[in-house]
Image 1: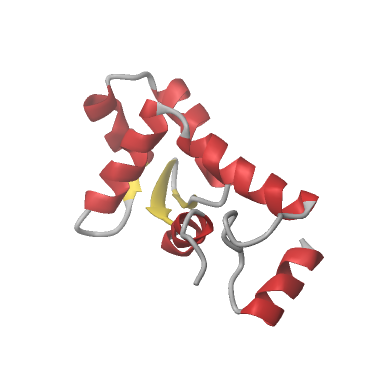
Image 2 (image 1 turned 60 degrees about the vertical axis):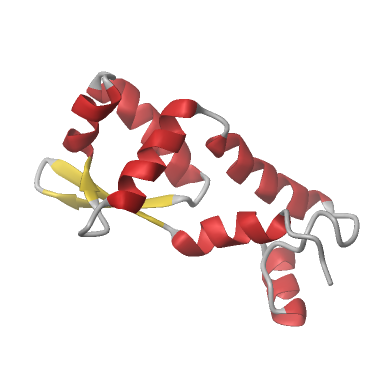
Length: 116
């Protein structure tokens, strides 16, 4: 992670384009964690529900109906998104409210952009 922070400071971007130059092992692992989290239809739907939320956040309980999945299954998928830095949660009582980490999504998008 220190090397990644150094890259940010030197280049002004967190995740350099995979098309610009070879990635080091830490950069590749960080990007792979993010892209792996995106490689599931349920998780993509979670992200789309969060992105469409007028309040910018959604209670975990509100995913059950639209996704047609059990609460434990949704929690599993949200945990993967959270570990990849794509969402963050805020516990309020017995529920957790999730929001998108738009900066992390932008980093992943930028990694696929051609440089120059």
